[in-house]
Length: 150
Picture 1: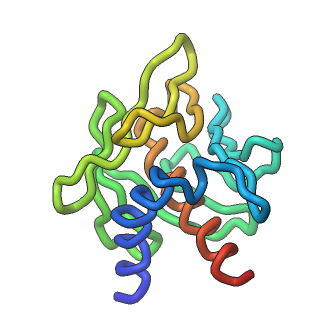
Picture 2: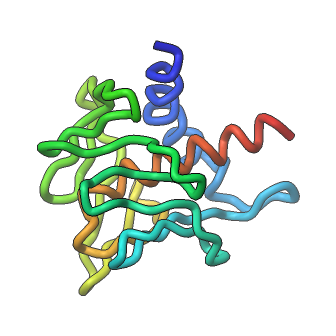
């Protein structure tokens, strides 16, 4: 239950915080962090640091091979199978309450990951369009936890 609440906060509050500058504006503590997913499903940040990967079974893992979540039939779940939202085929993601969280904009083989206001949050290969929100939100949550620990 606690983990479900954390992911819900990451989806609802995390994106709002990011949109208001937590990750969007460089600061003395952190720089802007965008998430990138390449054609192999590897997830990295702007510096090229590998954060995790997406398996062929649509499971999102971190670098320690810990399962963070997965997508099944267009629905996004946390590692324990708790529903978090829905990924639409057009690359739009909605949480369980139907609130629009992220979208993707196709640009050739890559897509931009955009927040509700249209701010770029990263890129994703077109083959992983449905995974953009799941991966972005899971790694955003990890980034928020790192900030809290400082």
